[in-house]
Length: 184
View 1 (tube, rainbow, N blue to C red):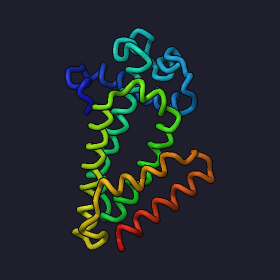
View 2: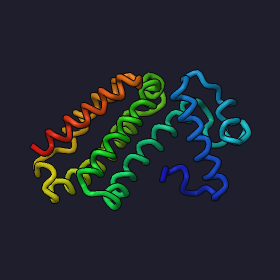
View 3: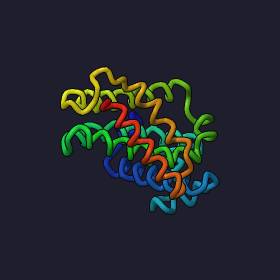
View 4: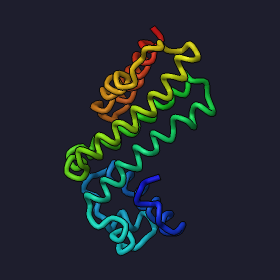
């Protein structure tokens, strides 16, 4: 859970979540989306949006943090439901989807998110990948010396691929290559 959500009432937390989801979708479509259109899509008033996110940069940072938290929470959930290799594969696919959203926001995110927040997000993702790769290694589905940092470096290549049908096919091929390399 985002640290800013800890003291919120349930209805305020629900509003915040709806705002972040609407913002993620709006910013993925166009970085120029107005905050008023995001508030409307979330079913809240502009005042509610600004109470939670006083600026466009704060909203972008909130979307980024929520995406990282969702990726981190996904790792144990997938391991609970699937064999380790399949869990890792599904996580990598979700990572690529998150990259599609981030792709249009890269410049704006640099202005909205501090270097420390980026480093914290990276460490959060390393922890998620470590959990997945260790489970894969234990199940004999990955080399025990697989480095989560290396996996993230390899996966980061999918973040630069445009989210076109051809780009999505290429990202799927790259994920398959990464997973095959882990088994070698």
